[in-house]
Image (cartoon, rainbow, N blue to C red):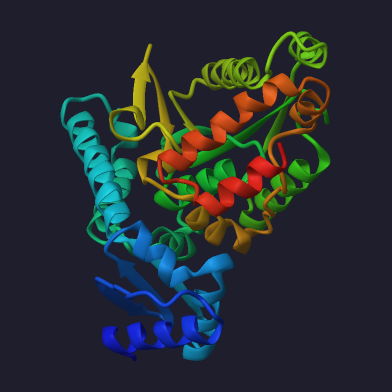
Amino acid sequence: MYSKDEIIEKITQIRQQINHEQVDVEIKDIQYKDDELTIITPDRPEKSIVIGKGGWVVGKLKEDLGVKSVHVVSYTDIMLKEYQMNLSLKHLKKMMQNGTIDDKYMEVFENIYELLTLKAQRAYDNTIVANYIKENIDRKPVDGADVVVALSGGVDSSFSTLLSKAVGFNIHPMTVDPGTIVLPKQFHRNIDNLVEKIGIKHEYLKTDMSDIINDALSGKIHPCGRCSSHIEDVITQKTRDLNISCMIYGDLLSTGSQSVVKKDSLMRINLPALFRMEKTEIKNVIINYDVKKIKGYGCPLIVEVHKNHPQYRSFSIQRVLRETRAGILEPGEALDLIRTI
């Protein structure tokens, strides 16, 4: 494989060939595994230089090297991911030691702790969780380790479903269904494809959200907050009805001490946040399970709200920016989403 200096020289040549500005190319380290090259730059400006405008530089580099893929990550982003995952590890260890975690879930949490430790040690490697899921998706569930997984059909909740099964939970995926204006057909297809692919049972939970929908369409509210709260209430009630004491969500932002919380004997795990997943990592997992990323921002209801009540677009843009500031979304991905709002 090429050395770091050879990669730097190659990138410099490519930038010259495609008439990019000639600048010093700086690389801190390179990692090569399973025909995938990871380039670690000192910071984000150096990362932008390696990627190039519109991704032309890194795309040409991948082509010239003949590798399966090239990932570019800044060392400052790696430091943040390591720090956040270590916060999660500290929080998990405390919960496992002080009796917060029920005995029936302990084996699964040991699996989670082991995987998270590995990911924290190799924060630059975006293949660790994907490979783990691939190797363990057919794992026999741990007896008694039942969880309800909130499955919306989006990429984050689909990822949570896959990882939950791979670490050993006995998963019960549930989808709150207020109708196609909130849960359109393409989400149904993702859900049905996923559960069929991995051979699990799934249930749609019909619910009435007409008050929220009508208030949103009339311009009284931005619906996302009330919609999320309603869905959580339905999932929580179903979890209690099944006498299950653990729920799993696809939240990406609630890292560290908020990644696993227990309230009134009911535990909530924000699985992507616990593992400090990024959107690109998640997409690389779910494409193998017949789950397609839905283009644009949000459901048909929010699209109508944006069209008829443009004053609410800024609220949606702010939600995108929150994930961008947290390093979950790349700026280019965020820009693509904002353009659809």
